[in-house]
Length: 436
Image (cartoon, rainbow, N blue to C red; front, side, top):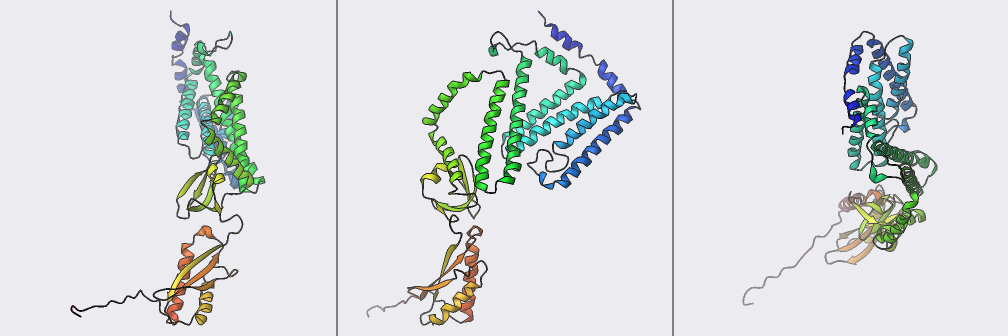
């Protein structure tokens, strides 16, 4: 038996309404709507441009309202949509039919949805590979929905989907339709997007302005985002019509999983919060672990990122930082002792040379005057007297190779100026004639 809704869907494919719309667009009165539309876009641009100039800190790649530029944020299409609604209400007062604005409003609504989802996802997951795929999916759904709205098929399609039951999701005596399920999915998606937007706003605005310590801000952001996402998921499931009491078994399953297979992951998560709370390791500290030395660039809930001075990055599980020995070069005192070795020839007047070496090293940029440099006779080498020149720096995060090279050059210039020989390795070769 043929579904009667298919006849209504087929009948709606009559393009008479669309032809009438095209006829109205070709009339001279459509120029009034073009002028109103251009005015709406211009006013929206001026408002957003003025807002961005007054609050430049609100603009950036992670900004949802303004975006990187004036027109690629959410605020511009929202203002344009509101002004377009106002212009549409003004047209009957002018005694003019509405044609162009009927097309523009669905397009602007789709643009608002796409901009909102894309901006929130980029702010919440800036480095995620699935963000672009999800953006494209939302874009396709929004543009297809606006096209169906324009041609008048959207209400008929919704009515047709409302007659398709989804029996495997039966709730008591009620069997939801496919339209109900799709509506619940959209509602859950909207709730999660709003939660992500709220968590990003908390991270970028409120916490940055009120919490000075970077580590405490990080732990506050992690806890806030986790609580908001869990709350959003529960609200979304409740909106979807699921009985949350039926998920009580999930808590026991998660507990068993954490006790056995997920114990390492749970340990890393707990260790991450302990590191941030105790502040034994902070973002920006210079640390050394397992012969890898670098600066802590980020502390995640599961791992810590350490960036070496040469550009390499190490991802260290947080549990390792709790259970293993870690050298923190920034915890107590950022000053670091650096040394270099040079040899001078036997017979050199060291009593006269030492003060000149100390003064020459002291003049090097980045070398501290307090504590000052020192020079010691460290060994009687085979080819000359070995001198160890030690000095302190207070910025080890800028590297030690550059300052050590400057000190070596200063020592070489001094020895050349004083005509003090840096001995070369010397070997004595004896030739014994045959029969001698």
